[in-house]
Length: 328
Image 1 (tube, rainbow, N blue to C red):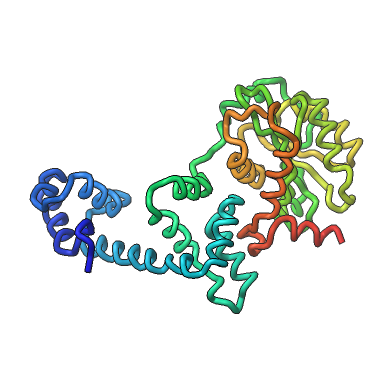
Image 2: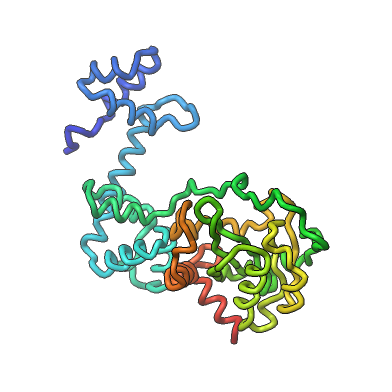
């Protein structure tokens, strides 16, 4: 039997009819003996893209959600599964990454498999409180976007004698050969500090680079040191924006043998892998972070968590797993 707070199909028909007649949501709520907030939420969640409210569609959606809630109890009945899901949410894995990884680890054991939707529904049907708040906070924030207008460095003099991205070999664009990287600086509070980010395009292997300063010499030397221990086949090129921190690109290439290609100004999509990775890094270091106060241990811990997180584009293997295979 449905709980008294759940709308039924008859009430949804009344809502649909009332809206068609031009009645206000408050009036409809009053006539049904419901709160106006209940009616507002019901209409808003079932009128996407300005489509008219339809009672049958709304009822179908409610039925599916109730089914997901029932399904999500699998986690409460299976403690190993629950432990795995909660542990990896705490590692900032997404529900999809967790679900796909479980399929790889337990291909024959359906008890250790769960859908991403069931994980989401489990979190959102938890009672409001500290546990729910902490778990939901682990989910990825899809609205994070880096602000191009905040990059004061792009107002500086243009890079001298650079090689344009248009001259970059086709093998870089189609990701057929590993060893091609994208780089950037993730800016700290008031652009006063920065974190270097380097991402390999094929494996998504990510290096987070602690910087004592963000001038061209410091960036060149620190980035070169990060590449030093990699085999030649895994350091072919670096694609960068036209920020002044890469002004010493010729010296960088001379010391590392890595060619540097420069994207067009204000074209972050030309370094899409790096841009997407920077958004993930913001889970660990939100906007406003003062990177001069972040320890190397914290930076490397975030790096390890990123590289040990399964990726959809890698068939839900981790960047670390794919990258290590290339080292042998």
